[in-house]
Length: 124
Image (cartoon, rainbow, N blue to C red; front, side, top):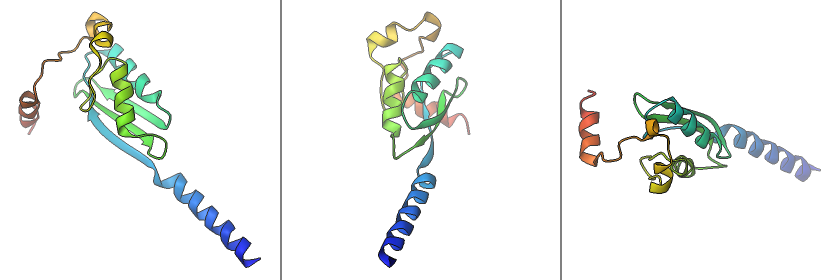
């Protein structure tokens, strides 16, 4: 009887930890230009199982995602966004997908790493 009660209690504790421990919020850069980009980026991020929230800011080109890290990873989310046509810090969209974006959504892909570092330096 004690053993059964203990295992039930253990399962309850593990279940409680699983519910609260895995919600994670991350921010990362995503290239884009307009409101259509915003909808596409957010839809791509939310299409990944485990993502509960996704927001993209066209001024800062930063995406904020909230996800369950037991169901998905930041890498998987960035891959989904790249598949939709938008470059992220880790994954680049294929030329074919990028070229099929509407004209207003074609962001500048030529920015070098030095330009990024310089851009961030001007915000201070």
